Image (tube, rainbow, N blue to C red):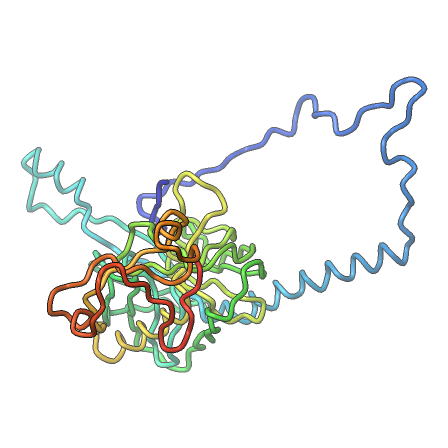
Length: 336
């Protein structure tokens, strides 16, 4: 599985043209002699049935429109410049170093976090930035400064000197249900305020090997380079997650940092510029069917302790390799 971050750098427009000329593929076949077309005798919907179905579709459409209108003022495009390492290497090879620093340009997205200018985005959007500028829906284009980064969750906060902004409202990502409609808003390939829709495909995705802390929401809403840092919203227009990465060779497989994690990290970055975390000194893994059979456990029930740091907090609490943690703070550890 190939995973890819989603900021756009050195992006050339890619247009796929589907030819509409020539012979069109057959959409239906004539019935053989003496036969009939399957479905030809199906009942024709009445005008009232057609009108009712159209009204339902219209209501769903209006729901997406409402999400876009409510959320877009809180979504920004982030333009960065960074050192172009490849061009710099070529310049040194040809003995032209010192004649101006080669610069690469990139685009990402962000979510307004506070009314006084704090913006939440992805760490990988801004981590190598020489300059950061933020474009708002109302046309303002303001310079920003980095407040803090958290590589462990791939989140960062930048700040502009502005007031009266519209902060995004964050939903409880723990309460989100797999299968519900979601909407992604951002600037894929620099195309600002692009809206795409899909469903929440899964929760609690981890083990992808991209970040130290992985507990992603998965969605099939279209996410492309430049969407990084933008919001994944529910149909109330509340932010469920911060879009972060895609499966490079797949379609319809994108990941977002859950809103509950994003809020906690954003608040710490805004307050101190860094994130402090407790250390337990314990490593855990899923209870697979094979492990469950060997240990006479229920598959997926709890977390299996596979390593404990000597003299760490977990060791002092008498946790040992082979223990199974079934609850945490009176909450059952969910199946993965």
